Length: 88
Image (tube, rainbow, N blue to C red; front, side):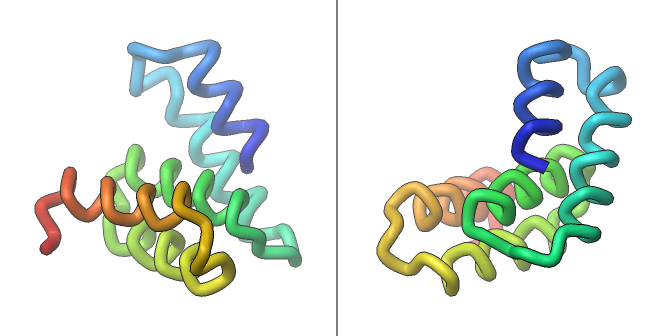
């Protein structure tokens, strides 16, 4: 999912509609991957958020925080998403 999300960001930065297939592929890849790492979960959360699946994005961010509670980037990602989604 990390590579697919990076590809979507590089290939189609301003075009959300063209990014959708790569984002959906990132979600499928993450669901199929047995290892759930903070980096994969952060990528998955970003993909969910962009696809409008806010509840799944929050769940992925929270799981990433559980796995890596001392990583500021993971905590910041969750906080940033919650703020942007106005979920206080």
